[in-house]
Image (cartoon, rainbow over all chains, first blue to last red):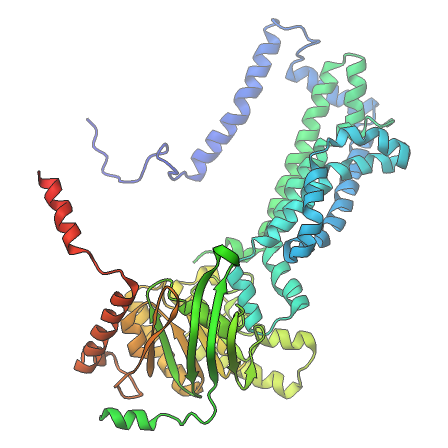
Amino acid sequence: MVIRSNARPGLWSVRGPMNQRSYWLFATTGLLVPLLAWWALASAGLVSKVFMPGPVDVWVRVLTWAGEDNLLGDTLISVYRVTAGWTLSAVIALPLGLLIGTFRPVQALLEPLTDFIRYMPAVAFIPLVMLWVGIDESSKISIIFIGTFFQMVLMIAEDVRRVPVAQIEAAQTMGAGREEMLELVLLQSAKPALMDTMRITMGWAWTYLVVAEIVAANSGLGYAILRAQRYLQTDKIFAGIIIIGLIGLITDQLFRLAHRRAFPWMYRKS
Amino acid sequence: MDVSEVVSAAPILAQPKISLRGLSKVFGEGSGATVALDNVDLEVGEYSFVTLVGASGCGKSTLLRIIAGLEYHTGGEVVANGKAVAGPGADRAMVFQHYSLFPWLNVADNIRFSRKLKAHRGDFTSAEVEAASGRAETLLNLMGLKAAARAYPNQLSGGMQQRAAIARALMPRPPILLMDEPFGALDAQTREVMHDLIQYVYHLEKTTIVFVTHDVEEAIYLGQRVVVMAPRPGRIDSICTVPLPAQRTQDMKLSMEFIRLKREIVERIRETSGMKTDLELLEKLSGQLKT
């Protein structure tokens, strides 16, 4: 029997500690194993390439897409659509959510309605959007807006509601009025949570991209995926999905970095 | 020192700083209504220190929050600083049990928050700005926060956080300071230090302090008068004048007067709360376990 002189709890204890090295070890394993499994499955020749192209095929497709088919253009237009739809909803949702989270009458007035609409499928709005907005860029932006806005409003309202009562009351006993409370306390206190909400909803905006590009698009990553489906270019479908995933991952990491920069007080511990 | 001498040395209540008359508070409506406070009368004079004790549910925090204007009363009247209370205001500062500091501001900026509010409204002269920055400096020193001035609240211990919260409340020189179990979450040693600190601040600033606690020893040590409250419905049971000199020292906690008063108050709270330990029941239970 081995007696450990070290009392440090093991890796598998409940909420146990983990050092940087083990973290990266596990993280890379989690990423590499599926990749290797995919590669092995594809190269074993058990599955037809039409159903499951290998990593190499997909990589080659990415290169030809970039070289001959304007991958950069598709990416940029998609990034533009997602950012525009998301920004539009953020600009409207922020003041609205702040008001819903602060004033009960506004909450009673708008929250049930928003709750109702957010369960309506954004995809089903496509015919209406085409009818009302047309088939140009604004229709794609509208779909992304519909997909993210209503969730975003509710999350922002919740972020504002989570501001501790003690902070609000402390400000009141220092003589803060309503506007000052909104500007100097509620908004400031909720800011880190709001930024997280922005990060999460940005992810959702990307999930609505493919849907949005169903609407009479002739460019964009989502459109490319849909077109590849028509010609059974499975490797291009794979490539498109992975690229969207990568863009999402990078945006998410940038948001996290900005969060650390913007709110150093959250990360500094004594 | 003679007891009567101390009492007569207290300032004359020409016009009380806080006056509650026939105050009542009912939470809820109809059959679900509960009476939190019933017909409470209390007067607190200028530059006096009053502590409120009682079992949980006696309405001591509610009473304090009504004076602060954070809770509205449903009957009677509340006058503070010569005005009927109708909502919170800067003339009645409040220190909460915890989590009231603004985590996004460092200690110095937390303390200066009331000044920021005034600057925000633009009603600030340059002389006032100067005075205020000196004031913030003084409070940092007074509270022993000089070294922590640029630290954020989540970097501080509970005791340091409460020092900052007290400094922030004192910043605009409020005539009334309300404290809602401010040391309830601190360990015993830190609490002792805070007791002497708040005593010192009280005599230095000459504010009127109303202090809520569930700790009888704390209530006696800090207060000139201890208001004992009782639950169901919340009401004032009795008011004791503390027979100790104005300047308190830790060894007074061991004096006869102190211990006698403590026993008296603890007994009163036990009786009124109906929380007496049922020794017979315990006996019976342990008997059952043995067989």
